[in-house]
Amino acid sequence: MPGTRSDLALRVVQFVSATLAVIAMTRADDFSDASAFSFLVAACSLQTLWSFMLAVLDIVVMVSHYPLLVDHLVASKVIFGDVITGMLTFCSSTASCGMVVYLHYDIETCATEHCTQFQNATKMAFISVAAVVPSLIINYISL
Image 1 (spheres, one colour):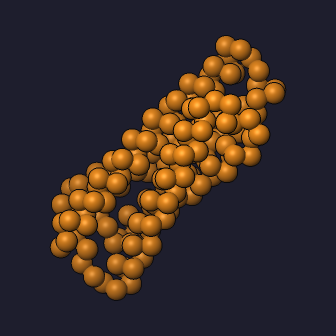
Image 2 (cartoon, one colour):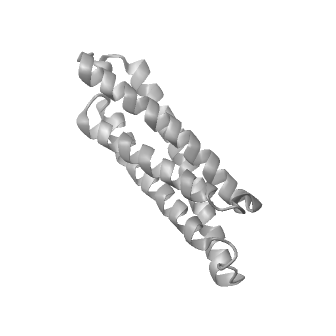
């Protein structure tokens, strides 16, 4: 539920993993050659902004002791944002995973295509999605 330590911890995990995914992907020079990798950068950037904004909101609620759950409009917007960012991040991470498998096993160009960075970025994106799901479920139940 918003404003709790568990929600803040999940937001921090989302923020850190999405940020690491963006950093790992953009360190490769040729990530923009595949649209799946560009989509991953865009989706994880959105996830980073969303998670940071909600982590700040959680900190403000915890410090001020304002009962955020009373306002169902705010809670429903948080749930809607979690659904959108979670779906975008999941879709982009699965597309990137498919592209990594294609580069690694089908055309075998991993030496020139920075496969390790692509794999690490995809792993971090999946970790971010894995942190969105419990946060979404907890927030939905708290409505």
